[in-house]
Image 1 (cartoon, rainbow, N blue to C red):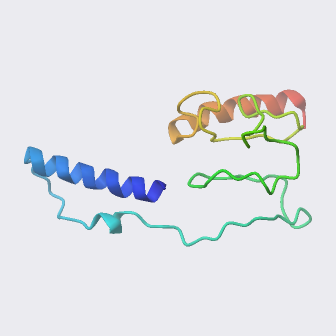
Image 2: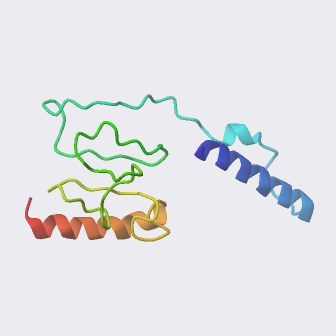
Length: 126
């Protein structure tokens, strides 16, 4: 979805520039080539004996918590958390839509939410 959104946004910018007759130094670029689609395959299991102590999930994914072997979601399959903190010690969420504010799922909100979670981790001395 995000790739399609980015492509459509870029086309909209091009259309606006053309309509307003704005001069740019950039030559016409095929919008599809501006967006590099990931060829990575998501893993659906993790060998904890071979892994490190942390799992960092990044942006550009669809929410799916089926692989988490904890009672972590509600009846709507939404994470049960408050500002990313769950009832399970050491298990946190980041980047969820409206986790704490409208910017929680965007890069501009990550630092603020991460700071809160880091303070929570420090306060619990894991």
